[in-house]
Structure formats: C-alpha cells, structure tokens
Length: 113
Ligand code: AMP
Image (cartoon, rainbow, N blue to C red; front, side, top):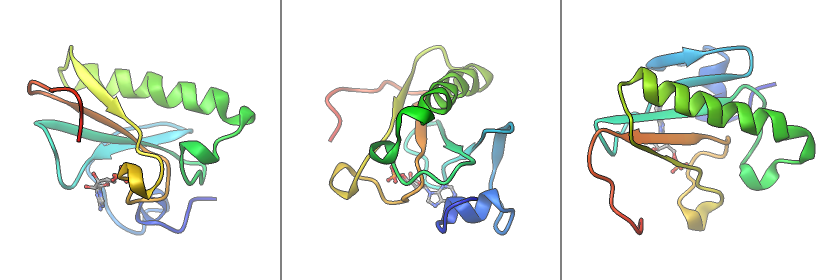
C-alpha cells in the first residue's frame, strides 16, 4: 500500500506527476522545484518512509531503484549525474516516502550544503 504522503497520492493516481519512467516496483517523475536542468525523483511503490526505515528484505528493491536512477539519467541524456537520498529532517528530507534524486545537466560541485 502506498504511503500517506504526496508521493503516495501520486502512486494512487490521486494527483498528477510529470512521469518519466514507471514499472511494477517504482515510479520516476520530474521534481516540481528542479535544482538542475534534469531533476527526477525515483520512488518505490512500496510505502517506505526513508532509507533508514529499509530492512534486509528491501535490498533488491533498493538496488532496483539505483539501477532505474541510472537508466533514467541515460534516458534524459546525462552521462554525468548525481544521486541523492536525504534521510531524516536534519538531512533535508521533506517528504517521508523514500526517494532517490537524480540530478544533472549542469556542473555539480562538492561538498553539498
Ligand atoms: P527531499 O527534500 O529530499 O524530501 O525531497 C523532496 C522533493 O520532492 C523536493 O525536491 C521537492 O521539490 C519535491 N516535490 C515536492 N512535491 C512535489 C510534487 N508535487 N511533484 C514533484 N516533486 C515534488
């Protein structure tokens, strides 16, 4: 069952999203406030609050999300890109449904803020 968050509502089709990829395990869509020319979020269909809430049985799903992140990056024409998973409010997580940010299309500096 999808989570009771804005992403859960997208998974249930209650609110629209700008979809770029979908399969039986996950959905990818454009971030509404892009931080770069390409900014896509990859989310599991399973209701997982954060990376910290993941357990051993989620290992395959987590691997799948990363493979989809790379596939989406290629699909969007990126060769260089960054993946980010914010876990917890102090790390910048604002939506408590696990999501992988895929960011690219400009020079990305390090360290992040
Ligand atoms: P985080 O801060 O890591 O939890 O990332 C949440 C992301 O979700 C932010 O980059 C937001 O811009 C994005 N976001 C929030 N609401 C929506 C929405 N309705 N459609 C697409 N992206 C969203």
